[in-house]
Length: 367
Image 1 (spheres, rainbow, N blue to C red):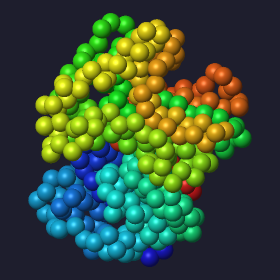
Image 2 (image 1 turned 45 degrees about the vertical axis):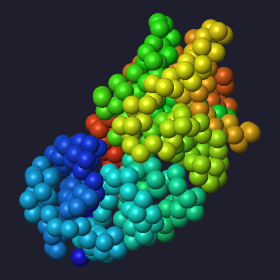
Image 3 (image 1 turned 90 degrees about the horizontal axis):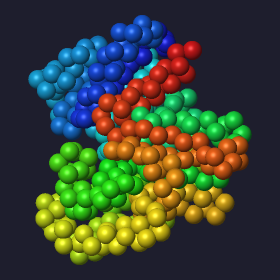
């Protein structure tokens, strides 16, 4: 069949918190944007997949119900690549998972002309060779890859950084609160006004509210922030090898590193509240407050993640709840940084970033 941009085929992998929200937004876009027509041709979750040999359309609004009722065991990744590359028109793969295996296959999809949008941090913060392969494969396959939601959910962090660079500005430093979980924890534990809660109480509350991973250690080890810094640093021009190639402060007490479960970790965490109190008390003696931040210094090529103290006049002092705040220091903006602030977590806002990337790809391929 001849290629046409009157319709674009969409494949969605992952329909959990972000994926289910994205499907609702995709349904809205399919109704409000008549051209090009968006045709869902493939949908999959961890144990089921739904597709048709003739690429006939799957109704977006009933896709999840049909997937549960009619879905078969997911095919292999090479099969998916072959299937999507044989579609009658352009194809966009939406990866709403955090799967390593899928991320590592991005170059193969892109070389076959399949564009990708994703919040998956693994592809862009893992092996540096994979990072290079992804973008060279997109160029070779005349396909596109966007991953705005891999940093800051729906906040325009990556697009802002790209705009600064492409318009000739020079990045000197990037600093901020990159984790909604850490933002909530420190706003509860060390508010700029008032006493604050014990650290273990704040962690328990965050877990109950769904702000942490099922095992809170997956947040407290600092690697989520490190992955985001790796992505931004690479975009800014630093060839960062991996999220473990620079200093990352873990907030997991050494004695609890090897406990068997997240529940046991939470049960024993109050024994170590004093360790965190010492950080807070040291800052308060200087009239400051503590936050868990990531920073990149382009001149020294220093990248680090951990607890830092700030004056109460610092912009970070205004953060509330689980909001993120990222400051871009550049030659153009001088000492008054460009700040992006807002909700940095949640299914709806993360899916909004994915949907925004979908519109970007459509603007390229539907010309």
